[in-house]
Image 1 (cartoon, rainbow, N blue to C red):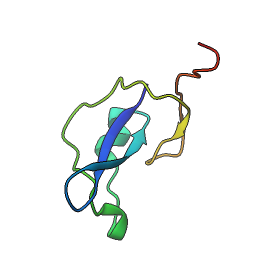
Image 2: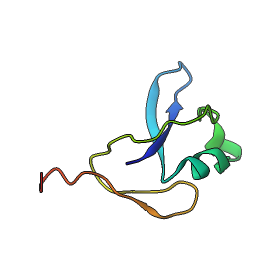
Image 3: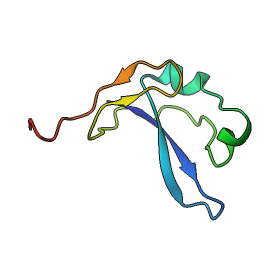
Image 4: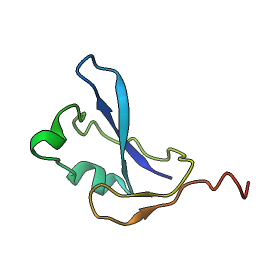
Amino acid sequence: MAHLRHINDSTGEVVDYAYLCSDYCNSEWHPEGIAADGVEPYGGWYGCQEISCDEVCANCGEIVEGINEEEA
């Protein structure tokens, strides 16, 4: 299960997500410079989100396990 942060384009549409392994990493992740453009600020708990495949935590680099749809 993942914690997510939305990444929006200039019109406010969600175009991507930052995947994080825990609420701690979500609250501690502060992208800088151009990477911060469009990233929503930490707004509290947004965990227990199912993702379809493994992703790397944007903060600490650990693997956030996804649901392997081929095995389901």
